[in-house]
Structures are given as structure tokens and as C-alpha cells.
Image 1 (cartoon, protein in one colour):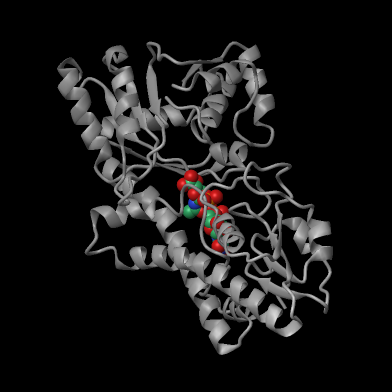
Image 2: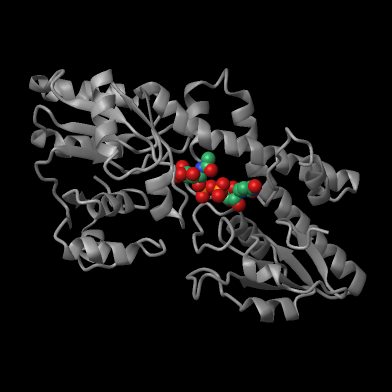
Length: 396
Ligand code: SAJ
């Protein structure tokens, strides 16, 4: 249930291992495109795999679920305006399959979910279908794949699997072991739910530490990249890299599932979110100040290159991208300055007029590095430019 960034690759990989899979999505366009053998997401090599499993008759997409031995809920869990998680998609997908469930079925939630969701959904199933009480196997099994490396990671990453009872855990492990080569770790549903949230929150906290250091270093006139490299020479220190904030649909979202439920306890997690959000604003202020300084010094407005819109290097994904937020803010305050927007992984954008990166670099007085794309890493340092390097292109 759900043919998005995780559901679709999972369905395809499972089918590739010989399992007969029906992929369900409420979006007709996604269903039609998928059946035509075309990927609606960006993921290297996956389209070839899709064509293979369609041809082999092991996979098809539809907008209505069918009777099956196992059901997987892989739909989004966004948050509402006040950062409260919204599990209505999980509930709706469950309601869609309710009439099809039979004793002995396996029912797994993969969607990132607040602690207690699997218990809540179990209650929903038993209330609507009392005949299934203790007759089906229910488990929570989060994914851990990194977009861009999904085919490898879906098969080779370890996974945590937590059932509502031991039998459910065992059944889920048996299913996943058909195509997962990584280790499958049994636990209970609540632990598995918090484990997923913990993984992404841990990364958020670590990035916040690096971002905080970068702001301290600016005040202290110290090169943060040098500092981190040197500190990481310690055998038990491993600091991540600062950037212009945290983007994407996972790390910048999942920690709120913890802070919303445990506001009194989740202090570091909440502060890390604030720091990573603030870092983008801090960067935007730095750009605007640099533009003013340039104007005061040279009595003309600078040409500014905003280098990189994607939320991380070498992808075309702009979801929740701090670089995009910074660029928008700088454009809004541009005051007749010439702002060139660069994103080498995208040809056209409906909001931003894009400039090829070499041209922008050539023309700009002020170069703002927002995302460390590989193209930018090859650029030569030039003494005639002012740099604002938020992602460590010229580390030294
Ligand atoms: N970032 C930094 N500094 C770093 C590393 C990352 O600023 O040193 C920034 C990136 O630029 C980006 C953001 O963090 O804006 C997130 O990027 P990411 O590559 O760390 O992670 P995602 O969001 O693409 O994928 C994460 C992964 N989770 C972890 O690494 C714990 C992935 O394994 C999960 O499957 C995915 O979230 C998910 O779907 O939950």
C-alpha cells in the first residue's frame, strides 16, 4: 500500500526475488505510469528492474488492493502545522485492506510512525474485524535506505522488526528474509517504532553539533573544517559536517515525532531541530550582509551566484531544502542586485530561473556555496571573488 520513494522500490525488489506483488496507490497517474514501466521517482537502475518484474508477471500496480498473504503499509506520515504527527494515511490504507484480511495473514507497517501506532492500528483492525483477533500477524518494520542507493541498501542493510507478539515478529522476519541479506533483528513494535525515530534524530543532533560549531567558529575566526578534521583525529570523536541546515523528508521531520510525544524529556532533540532550522536563516543573513558590504565598498550592487538548490549533494531533490529557503529569502530582498541561481542537477524550474554553473561562477562577484555538488568541487579558487562557503567547497 503506497508506491512512493520506499513502497515502489520495496515492491520491485520483492518481486525480483520471486514474490508475487501487487502495488497499490491511490494516485491513478502513478499506477498508470508504473504499469507502463516508467519510474515516477528518481532512483538509479530501478526502472530496469521495474521493466523486468512487469515482464515476468510478478508485479503490477493498481488503485485497489487485492486478497493477499501479506500486506505492507508504506504511505507517508507527515506532520500537521503544530508538528503533531498525522497518521491518517496509515489509517486510511489500513481501512482499504480491512475487508480483504484473512486469518494467517501478515500485516506490516513500514511508514515512519510515532510510538504506539502499531498498537493503535491493531486496535482498529480488531474493532472492525473481531474475527481476526489473535488470528493475524502484525508487525512494524521501518526502512533505512538512502535515496540514490536504494537497490543496494534495501537488500543489504540490517533491519529491525517488531511484532505485537513473538509469533508476529517471527512471521515478519520469515517474509523479509526472502529478499533481505542484511541481518534481521527481532524486537517489539514500540521499540522498532522508536528505533527508526532515534536513528534520524541521532543524525539531526550530530549535524546540529557541527552547525553550532560553524557558528562559534565564525565568531572565533577559526576555520571550522580544519577544526573538525583535527578533532576527528581523536580515536573516539567523529563530528559530522556543517552545512546550511538539514533538508529532505526524513531527518528534518522524524525528530518532531519524538518531541511532540515527549516534550518534557526530548530537550536535546528539540534544540537540535531549532539549531538546524536556524542555520539556514543565519546563512541567509550572512549573504545579505555580504551584499551590503560589497555595495558599500565598490559603490555598485554585486552579481551573486547561489550555488546549489538540492537538499544534499549530487541529487535533484529540492524537498524541504534549506538552500532553496536561503535562495528564496535572498531573492526576496535582492534590491536590484543580480542573483544567479544554480542547480546543475535540474534543467528547468517553475520558480527559479537557472543559470549554468560555469557561467554563474564566471560572472559572480559574490559566490555562495550552498550544496556541495561534485561540479563545484572542481572549480578553481579566484582572488577576485568574495566567497560564502557554507558547505566546505574550499575547505582550506
Ligand atoms: N547533512 C549535513 N551534514 C552531514 C550530513 C548530512 O548537513 O554531515 C545534511 C544534508 O545536507 C541533508 C540532511 O543532512 O540536508 C539529510 O541528509 P542525509 O544524507 O543525512 O539523510 P537523508 O535524509 O537522505 O536519509 C536519512 C537516512 N538516515 C540516517 O542516515 C540515519 C536514511 O538512512 C533513512 O532511510 C532516511 O533518512 C529515511 O527515509 O528516514
